[in-house]
Image (tube, rainbow, N blue to C red):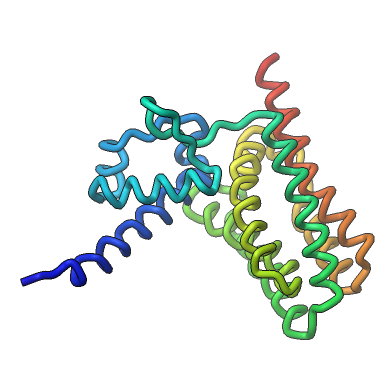
Length: 231
């Protein structure tokens, strides 16, 4: 006879699996901002029961990727110019402090992590050829790995956790900007290499300036793309 103890781990595992898949779909804009997240649709899409789906939705509400309105259910968090500006400001604040600390405290292992993360992302980007298939998701994940590696020696797990949430929220804007105006980011590899080289040289001022510019450029592209679309 099965007991609650037997069932709980499976339920938790299923909820985590639904959470990871739904989160990835929202971040990559497979599920578009503002799209309604109907329970039956999600249950069918992820082959899961109502309880794991609801648990996943509630977790994503706390991360700001899903919104919930009384009597109206769940929705993939909408995007707006005000939100991208607010998000970019928060990323620059946390990113600056974490990057400065990481440059001061990073050792040889940190340097190796940064270099390896950069080369993995660069190879994947080159191999993808700018496609929007499964390879695109891998490129985006490796892009996140590179930025996290830069901050990984900061000494604060809380800062890294907040960075991850902010980065994934911003990832939706980056996906949208890439879809709308690929040509506006002419050389992303050179852009990231310059950040890496400044970080490895322990040039705090330059590394922070370039890192901030990188994040603000995404916001600028999104806002310009919105303006173009409204014309």
